[in-house]
Length: 123
Image 1: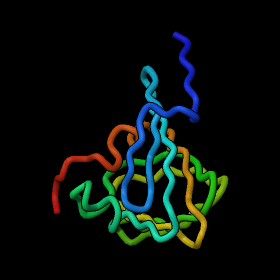
Image 2: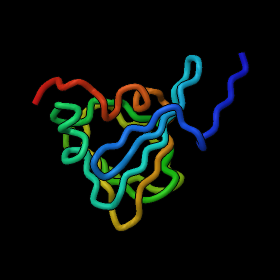
Image 3: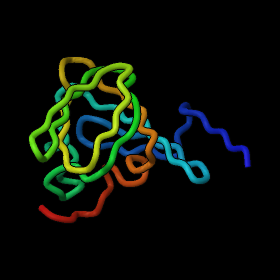
């Protein structure tokens, strides 16, 4: 089955403090475009929605704009920026660096499926 959708008309938009997520749902594949505004940090913005100590969503994708810092639960840190392709396993915090919004294309499907609407799990 041939299926085509456009970023201009996402299937869903989820707003959260300091950002939003737009998703496209295709047969067997979910795609997300996430925008994080300057000052956004996961633990302050999305943690209250997720109810977990750190982000438990696996992210795979590419940074289109802006810079973001990532810190894993084990203390490992990295920074990503435009053109960087990433795989970030569950168990991390993240925040925007600088005054430019961060835009990412998340291709793995988990972000489109669960991000910023997860049920409260652990505090």
